[in-house]
Length: 136
Image 1 (spheres, one colour):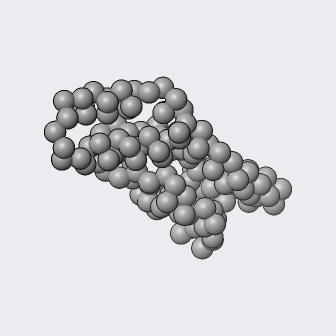
Image 2: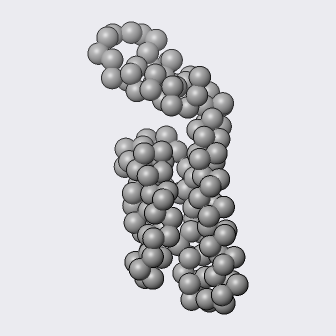
């Protein structure tokens, strides 16, 4: 059972209109289940390896070309990405993309990390409710 399966079970239990005296206890236990949090992070980390390799390759190339302004802007754009992957950076996923990752693209008219934009929409989805509810 992985993170998504457990999360789906929790969501289904919460959505259920059936009166059950154990429902809240079960949800509470599932939310505290230690491997639950680790599985979520492991999935995110695994899916984020390729984008991180891409970032490093791009930074190395910019260093080789001595593009100091681009190096600084790219580093500024992505420095919170590891915290975001682990769920420790509290903002909506698409907001993180728009405010951080895409910042570099807007300045330099680039397509930096565009191949991984789907991660912020499909894989890392964080909504205002999830941030307030402490899912991450």
